[in-house]
Image 1 (cartoon, one colour):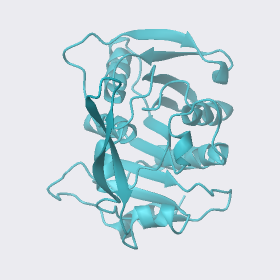
Image 2 (cartoon, one colour):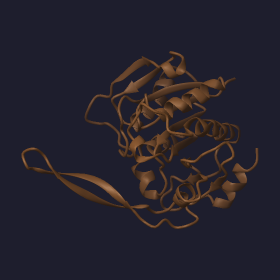
Image 3 (cartoon, one colour):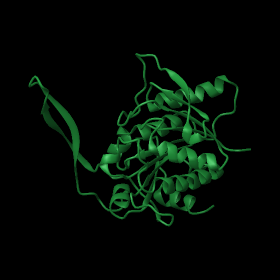
Length: 271
């Protein structure tokens, strides 16, 4: 029986990363259900919509040979909740795996993981009891919100993502792991090495940029200044060493059941 996968993201249902990953999944004849925001919802974290209706619209997807997906007015976490419970209410078996990405922009460091809508998909999935993986890729800043072009290497990243997915569906996640956070470098090739990494705490110092509207009223953009990145972290691996980082993320913020990096390395290095 073909694996049954729920795919979402925070860049929107027509973004380059979800197009590439959906095509790679479809090529393997795996079943894929796509539920994703209709527009860009980056950096919203694990927000859930309580005070507005969440609308779902079935739409044909050209990148899936016209097969349908669902675009939502809700957040990435909303998409997971809807997908899981609609599946259960319809009497169908649960998804084998819930995947997010591939995000245009890496999500390394604790700061990014807690902010990321991509990782929110995996947090929500893990809290609902599903194995999950978040995929992100370092890209040039001008491609963060550009759906018109596929960043270089995105299709290679999608193929690599499917191999990681295959392994997780075959073996499950290591004990105590909520989800895997996977980040691809912008120089990815078919032989780019993989490293199991701990997360950096942060890689930016956030600040505000002041601007004025035509009436002279100030408004602000929030951006970040890059900090020195500690070695032996996910951010250093992706941004400096240009390798693929995989970080096992535990849901227990107080440290319970925190899997060791060594255990994860052993798990991922064997078929």
